[in-house]
Length: 272
Image (cartoon, rainbow, N blue to C red; front, side, top):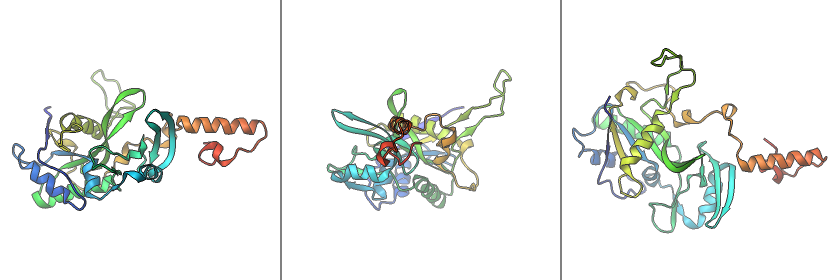
């Protein structure tokens, strides 16, 4: 198997209302052979958000984080201010709900796309309509990792391709049945693409060639979604974050002493 990854040059600054698919296709014209059937496009969420007008004033950053937050997982005071790890409205657990002030104009911050799966689908459909080929699209964003230093890109929107590769029930090279192996292929694609895109090189899109077997030949029902990569709460051993754990313990201690905890004691209204 051979995998090639190309970063697209010449995309430039994306503005609200821009035709993102047209911009990507114009840049892809410089690729060897142009964009091809079975290619996968890894598109940085930042240019998706810019095209969709998801820019707000930096003065509203803290309120924007609050508005995008479903629950606070952890919070810590640092010399640079309060760091909040939260679950956002897309179900993703990340610092500051993905609200970002890098690679944007001074005085502004950028929210994540409203619906990254839909954003990816629109690019897939535009490529199909204009070139008559099928591609996969992964909208990527940079996430930190529990227990590990550093950040890597992960999939927050998917269309036109398998989100995961479920190998359960298959046998390994020694004949052992694989019981838990589900490969997060779109997260792997996002991370690999980041190696050529970079964080400050002005290359927000990469093309991966050699993964055509993962690209849909027909439109699936239901549509593809990056939410497939989110572990269900009843399977998540680490769902409760430090902020919630502390609040739950505090509320339990109050109850042990016959005291009804106030709403603020649990942080979410009641102990999880």
